[in-house]
Image 1 (spheres, rainbow, N blue to C red):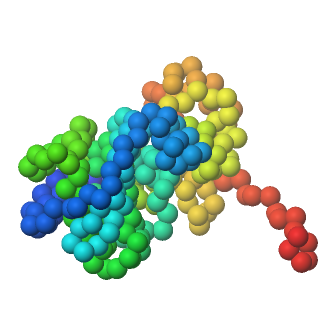
Image 2 (image 1 turned 45 degrees about the vertical axis):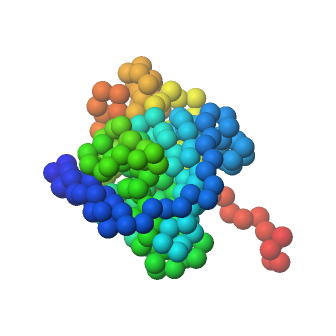
Image 3 (image 1 turned 180 degrees about the horizontal axis):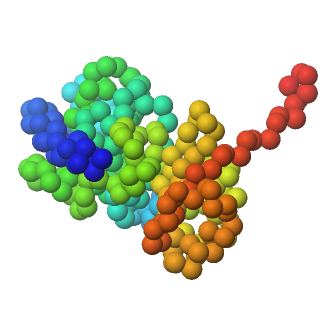
Length: 273
């Protein structure tokens, strides 16, 4: 499994380099650029910023650009590490037309391309929704974000990503690509409460560092690899669930599989109220 993932992602820097070469004939025109750091993010997205802070948000560069006749909005979020970048990304991707299609973590939808490059979460929105805009969106990533292993030329618009390309998805959660829209990394109570009712109840008042999560809609169950803050926290949690729910116990990690809690039935009457 690890060999397969390594082979898939080895070619990502090459894909970025090729895209940069093909698009080098024209430079994006930046019509507006804004930078948000720290609590300044609230001025950009109000209450939605709380989820980003849960993942350790550092900075955001927001750009409105024109490129080869198409308009785009490019948002580049700097997170502490590759797992946090994947985590906030995983909370924003749902139905992908194409997922992890170029050997990277990416999700293409009719009006947006989202991706993770090292410790950066990238969102590119194109209002036209044209096939050309979708293609050009992929060219923009290597023009603005440079991965650790790529060899793109330096310029003032480029951001250097510091960490490894791959998130640390446990093998029992990863299974096989694609991961986008399937695997989530949950960092705190906001992410957990919007993902799993059962896990929300389980982890209330529990000290943990993060959770790798994979739902199985067919069986209405889920797998979760919980990373605990200490051996004591892990040991205390183990006593709260049946042994049959535990698939792996290793150091400060616990892999569990459980049934999801069904939402309560609607109380609407015959006429929908």
